[in-house]
Image (cartoon, rainbow over the protein chains, first blue to last red):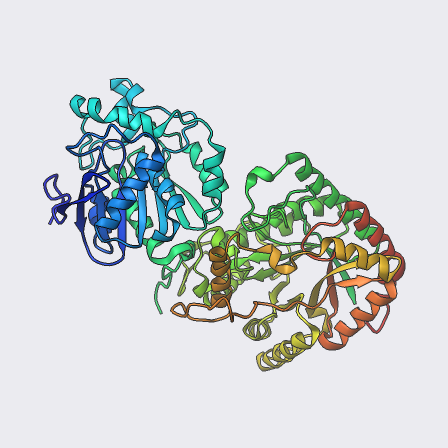
Length: 270
Length: 370
């Protein structure tokens, strides 16, 4: 079956759990080890990459508290958001899991891991937005720069839609509160430096939102991490290079740091 | 016996990091250029001291040896010291394109007027992460690639290669090497497979840091396989590589050893975390023939090599150790890097040691009967 906009995410089913005073929606598909995905500031989005990952893992895409129907005017820090997310994930029945975070979700995933290290088996950070040196807030991007900042390949599915003004008006104040100014936070640097989790850090080389140079900070501070640049991809790596994204994430989650070792068969003929 | 100088080009800057790969941010180009200049100074001093060859090797992503392509430095050294024999021991063959390797060595042999000897090696575990090479295929790729390199040197007509791991439909190496049929090729004898392969195909045999009694068993395999192939190796075909640091007294030498020997050989490819250390152990096991599906237990895994202690001491003490090595291995070539391990010692200490080697060690090694 060929991929169309309507088939992306078709295997996922939704349910809602109540935790920390919020109804939190989970979209889930696949079997195997749990891979919990925390989305970016635009909220959860089905992608070809998640479909591919669901072939190997039990993928759970979380709608963070405040991104759904209920407003979230009370959460002011990323630690608080991560605590709420952790409570929701636990309420959904996930005790330990691989954790993947995209952009804002990457920052949230890092906070969650420092707060609840025993729950996280390994960590995947897609263009994480915790450190934002020489970067652009999506809210500050002029309309003609918005799409190229996110996508090198807007022709690939699913199409990148411009943000809905009503959604932005409701969610963006929360985003700004939990993200803060992006100033250097040595206390948090020390927190991630103490983590021993296997971590894969991915940046698109053409990322126009979070400058890929920020990947160096994670790699430098997190001794058990690997930094990989994805060629011909912008901020939305899953959108631009879904097969490549799913390929490296699957290999990393299956083999851990042994994914560094090439085990491809090079035999031409016996 | 011949005495050969292995110039490791160990970065002399203060920060080496603590694991492989070392982050490039800790590299300081002033220290780096000083390292390369000191390298030439030490080569010059080694030749003055009576060393018979200047040798280099390939290593990647590490301050322990600033030598990702040893042919570059070997070429410059060979032109700077026009009477010196030059050895590259060697190329990490399974991670490289063998045809390209043959082309580069052929060119280098021309630049050096036929003064070149070369080594085909499999490399340390970390090298399999350098370009993403499959370590479980290392042995098979190595043997095929070595014979392909030799074919590149010797075939007079354009030819193709339909191998198990390499496929080339057209090969025609220009320039051809000066030496006919090709520069002498050395193979590592640290494994029994390597020793047998070298003997079977008429190559030289080299040992690195292994205890002489362990080497002796593989020397015997080498001789047996050579005999089966119809030739008889001499001592000149066998080389032994070690670290050497000679001081006026044993105590003075031990002081340097205590200061700089930290980490041992494993410092070449130490992982930053238990996870990445496990990766190195898994690759090491793969190179040793452990199949892909067997996951190594870090608690019980054997190190890939238990090295023989470096040749460190007064001239008499070092000569005694060399004699011990010679009794076990029967080598005709002793190749040494000046130091106590993979960490750098101060340039001045290396130069002083070279002078002592010149006065007290080299003349004895060069005597008849060794």
